[in-house]
Length: 85
Image 1 (cartoon, helix red, strand yellow):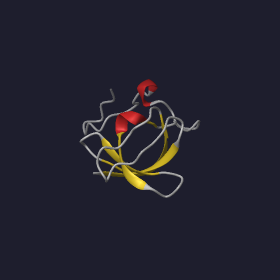
Image 2: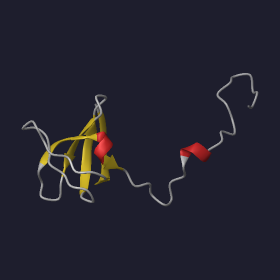
Image 3: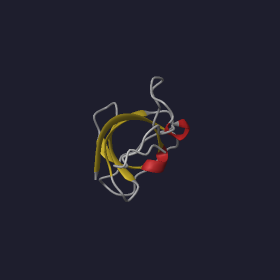
Image 4: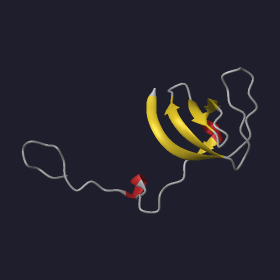
């Protein structure tokens, strides 16, 4: 389990098949309480209902002050000999 407390926007509807799953619709905002390595996330919707949702149904908005890690370049290394890469 990977604890988190972030907001996500549902990108496609999900209809539950088990009692612990949460029904969501496209465009809905949910809070992600936890992510699991089996590609499911524990979410709570605006009505306070809680349940599991497939992570593929969720989009996480990137804050405008948060840089895109794909464009990041490291300027130093943890090498103990003082070399910089």
